[in-house]
Image (cartoon, rainbow, N blue to C red):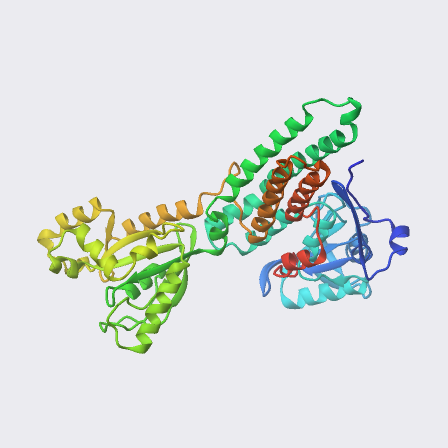
Length: 512
């Protein structure tokens, strides 16, 4: 079967034959013919830069009549492609000058949307933008919906869904590591990986179908089934390794869920305030001040962190509210990605125990051993000993050496001492939890991707399960491979529906 992907862009005769209310899409083996009558018949515009007063604002126009905007508003009859023009911009009806700015012309398909595209870079005053939008409306254009420029790019095969989701994450990235991960995804590293896997499935389906149709006629190699199974086993191994990544990309995208635990009055709220660099949590000398979860976000070494201060863990509390706070702290810790366990340095010195025994008893008393080392996983955690400022200065150096030898971080929230060591230790843990995004090792950043990839893997396993039966039907087994390829197609958009697209584009801003 011939593989092709073509998109109707500017054929007015075909457009006129289609209903303007429906998107008609035909899917083929390995490709699709997409005809979007509503999008193809309308030219859209929107402010693509930030809202509010600014020095320069960018207004984007896309559609088969986009050139009209230059012709009617700047008197550029035959502009050169991908060239910047400094022009006076006029109202198309009154001829009144709106502003003087830069105009850019990108004829399709070599544009972001794949359609004819014009950009106006004008001064960012609200009156200028209002007049410019009104002028574009007079030409018969309509305002773009949220994400419509990117949606058209998808329909015109300029971007796949993984690149689009990466683009959305890039816009919303708040830390350096989030930016790196999103940029890699937007640049197509996931698309390349998944397309290679999909091509492998496609190739093996073709070989299996040939084996089914022609094996008895002896016009096909005898080892074709063995080779296909070897290829598919190799893909199963790749998928299994890829999916056992500890959700690094998803955690980096949403933030490392970090909980601060410890006994009452050990300095948990003070530590939270120090890490977020503001007085966010109430700090008093009264034990049990914090009753509920206090969540704040922070950027630590480029990693997004969701910090949670919790009620002090105590087994002998008679206060019902404090008991509920402790219960919530434990529930939160179960689902956390990272735990900071805070210990009081003064209490340790008073105990006269070895540091190993004290920490063991401390964790046992707070019932944290099962929480940190349960059957499902070993939690990433560090131990922080607070209140160094209250330790005798003569024994402080020996004290710090002892902590260092036992991988415990000594700090003073009052004197802001030891925080460089704490941040270094946290960063090492975050690198382990989130990884370091790279082109060579792209990570799964979306739950949607993980679901479809898991389904793909299960289909491949079903294939081998069916083939292991003595009386197996290779036709039925091959259908599992076809379903696996369909699941991969759902990740990139080769097999899609409007519900999936609506979910992806719902958070896009107008103008993108």
